[in-house]
Length: 404
Image 1 (spheres, rainbow, N blue to C red):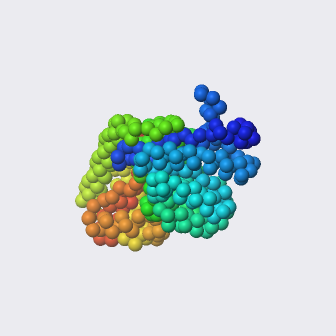
Image 2 (tube, rainbow, N blue to C red; image 1 turned 180 degrees about the vertical axis):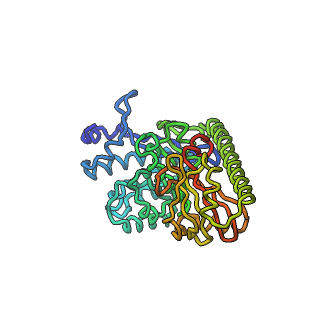
Image 3 (cartoon, rainbow, N blue to C red; image 1 turned 60 degrees about the vertical axis):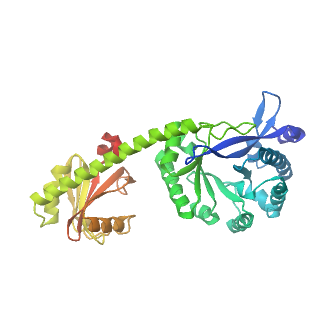
């Protein structure tokens, strides 16, 4: 719709509410307020395009926004409920008066029962290109009133993780629509994983939005999602719903996910034990004197599993050559001797664990620097201060889907 048409029909502007569900209780924990315009009983249009249009004058934007929020706060206080209410805010417009008009609006409903700690102001991380310190000061100011902050629409490759970290929001809203795109899927998944790590570091709750399928719910569940939102669980509507609206669905899905995850963990444990037993037997059969020669002798035992093997000391310096399988044949790459790998994530942590527990470790999945393929690495203490690293081939992992 043309912005002028919306302004001349502003009395038809109403809020709709999309439920947000919690993983721990499997119940509604809050709602996001969404703008709609009711043309007639059957024709209700989203105001999303209006709010995303940079050509809309700020005074239009503010007038429509104010009407929606007033209506939503009236519905909310009348409900006598204590769920979270997510209110979208444009950071640039919010900063025009240092957030005072929004604060006044919220404070006006406190005598009517509004608890400010249940209000979540949702700021789009992509639309604000101003000074992050100004926004940071405003957020800190709102926090003194108990108001919570969510950063939304993150998950794209362009997300500025450093800026998000500086804002230190209470909630990170991660957009799952990237999982519906077939191109560059791996790169997007890496970004989503980074956001999950960031949320843990800054103490923010992860909310996964735009969820439209079971596999997205499973991804959110596996990657630290406490809150879930999307058409898969609830479509926006003009009223609040029962708290247990999707409880049966969530419990059933969680039980499926748990069974699947336990099966994968058992498979990984069995793989770890198999590799450990194999190495232990080889150490007993073939005396380790010359490391390169010993690796050559054991390559045939790992030809169906591994594509690269080498030995390092406890400080990460490589003691052996690389033994690498190419086109079915193992090659010696002596140029890798004395290279240091202690800078790799978890390297020293794994060394300390192996030294203390005297057993092998299987890494998480990661992308190999040289091949770019998804791999796992099994490491094991073969001598005092010496550790073998066996990189498992993607083909082997793929043939055993529980290993991926």
